[in-house]
Length: 549
Image (tube, rainbow, N blue to C red):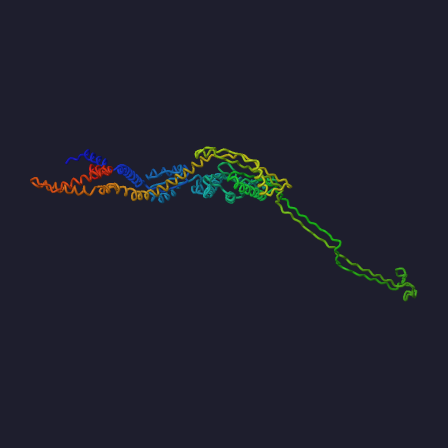
């Protein structure tokens, strides 16, 4: 038997033409979808699995790794602008890492103390000193690079030769260049920690002699001298800054409830008095007297006698009166004295005024206006809005609110200024691009993970019901049997039976069908066709298509 492709194709076309409209549309979609699913599953199944070998590498290290992988004929792919290398199959990752570690790959930009592993004869002391500094710089770079926010770091250390004279001695210095990751920022404590790490790793190096800058050239640990700060230390400056920031946040949070977030900017300058005053006062009350001490003195005098001139000659006399002086007419004298001390009441007061009092506040507030969509503009014109400045009455109310929030005091010379200026609207297109790229990357990862499960669901809930729909008769075809009159069915059965009897018989016999009953059935069917022409048309189409619509 000859295999005729054209005849088979013709039969398929005829079968497709006889299909209902819904099945004619569904069949090509089912075939195309099935082919697409088969191609996708085959590509996904044949795609090799990759595992990360190294990430965050330098260009030189990546080139060395790629060269060795090519020599060993190991499959790999490069991602993240050449900083990440993935290999396949994933089972060889650990073995390759150990092999590359034994070969000293990746080396990185900074070399540590391993540079002393290879010793060479004839090196001078200067070369040895340079190697020591280079090794120390490399070790510090590796340590600082382990911080999450730091992407890369470079350190330069200068160690001057020590002098025997103390006045001529120069202390070592260090410079640190940090390249931070996108969207990351170091806090003050982290910057201070880096400065202390570097200073404690180098002999005689102090944190004040360590300069830390970022990739944009901004000094992260800027230190000002006492002359530049006007004699104030960092604690006083931080206290002043905290007060100003507190007032600014208070004003901005209050105005955000009125104008909306980001529609007001406040800056406060506080003049503080850090001088410390002590005052001591002593007051006396003359009316309040208290006896402190009392003393009484009494004196008395007896009979007096006369004596000669002092000396031996005057005492060696025969005068009998020297032994027993005669009675004289002088009498005895007495004196009484009383002394009382009084304590006057005294009040001593000492007043100490604390430092850091506010002498004056200067407040500047910028507020944005109001925006309204133009009249008759649809949703497409929402980005274009008309700017309307605030009224003078509104500005006056905002000024009064600001004065109340900062504790305005006109006697000390406080100043509050409120200005209405249109704010600059930054272009957020670049940020949107990064957000969209990140979203696409996340969606791609999720799609790769969930693709097999999704295909299983599609095959079970979509392809299976569609195949069942194509191979099973439609509801209209099933209902056609209900449209057939009962008399017609009986008539067909009788006619088929009569034809069978007539073909088997050798002679013509009289038909057993009642002609009058047949005419009645035909007239009844004609009446039903006239009353239901649409059902009759469906019935005729059903007959012509051999049981299909």
